[in-house]
Image (tube, rainbow over all chains, first blue to last red; front, side, top):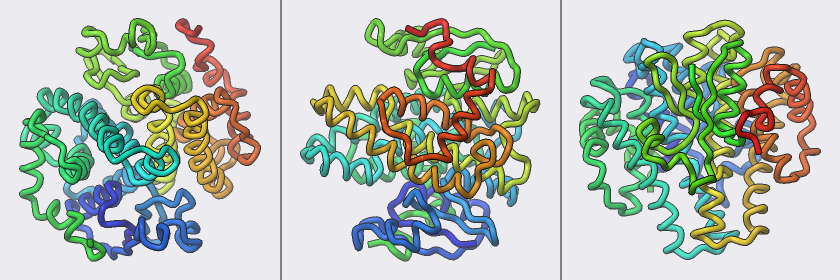
Length: 212
Length: 212
């Protein structure tokens, strides 16, 4: 198995966490999203992934993009340490928690969107920071409310799921942007328990070969 | 079954299409995203969905948010007219196509993001239009390339899948914003075949009770 990723990419971070939680070993191929104007725009990488985004994942002759599709594939082909509950309603709630972050928060705060804000729209640093803070606050406020209903040790009960995998990079980013997260005590308690896991630690951006 | 939605919401549109394709009847409860400052912010709706987004779906005592989680739930509980292929790699590719749109394009062009651009960031109409055109072009260019590899009558082979369900509202929005879509011939041919289906027609925004 081979993962093309970038140390700070939230989507790469999710796939690394899932692979580690399932105890699957893989080769890691860094794609630097900033250096050389962004290596994801190179002809070689575009052949692999025309969306010019990371990650791309290879398992034998199967080539996949989109972190959540990759993780669902891993879940199906490598069922050890399941990342989704088995009952349909529970599974749907876990997926909904994951999408609350992966379809609402991550897309509006990712690198290329922030680059458009400061580039094409000429936003100031203050406007960029307020943009990030606005979407984090909206998402985390709703997520905290859902966790008061669903959480045990982790986002959904007492097993690590896809929801936790999506939460980790969002907290990493929020902390990187120095946001005050004290209004989300359940979310932060779950995050702290997740950080105690070896599989999670080893997936952290600063523990990757391409970390700067 | 009951669906809280809004006629023009892409995510509501996806769920309506999936329900129709599976031949499932449901009650439709409109939540007007603009009127009264946005009915999704009402106390009653926030109790149902703290993220203040549509859709919310009810099936007996199961309450779900996030369109893709709802559709995966329908797929599992009501397997007629499957919306995902059965082989893991095919399934993953269909999900990846769906997420290419649902995690990259829809989130950056939805109502609340456009409201932030013209409100907080004081963007002009021209800047707002360029923003939309930029993300549609990036996403559709990559999507067109993937379809040349995957498409048959529909996005992935000859059955309607989750990928098609996500494509339909994005073309609807792009056409609403008067974008030139002639650079995406495969995508548009698939879209035309989809529009010939009754289930798809009946899910169209203008055919909903709350259409204006």
